Length: 232
Image (tube, rainbow, N blue to C red):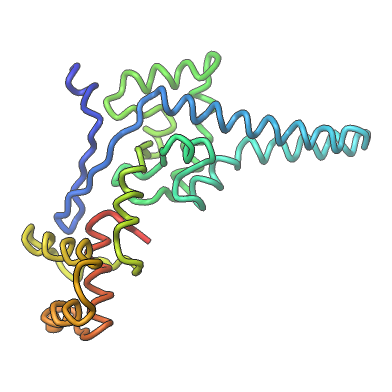
């Protein structure tokens, strides 16, 4: 049991028999990220409140309406449109993803954030905190219902920065381990190989990719980037 708590690694296998890994974020960084987001929301609401404070009943209605949208849509919009990261999560190097490590979707984000009301009970997110501590994946009730996780994104971002700037490509078929190593190695060595050498190597796979020359290089690099976790 203790080992499970200390081991924050998370591993999933895709239908293509590819293993993806991530490091789960525990309660402490998640609470700190929430505190930062809460502070940002509070400052924005204070500014809006002061702006509309002298508009009478119309101002109060505007303040309540904007407060509602900021409270409920702030995390959803940032999580879906900013790679799973609210400003607080980005500052802490965290990100929300689906439990198969794919990017979080609108439906997943909406469910996990709507259930924050239940996680808040009886006060101060006590139920959500107890749920996270008692769960080996550090999921609160909203995460369990939505099928989401909060992971560290720093390592993936650093690794992605070393990859060629090409769109990721889904592998054309199920690849065995040796093939996966070949694709990822080609993508990771893009700075070490000359353009002519890259085209020579990538064109070898023309019967599989139906591409040659520069197009083959970009395609093979894209598959390598996909295998290394890039999904955009």
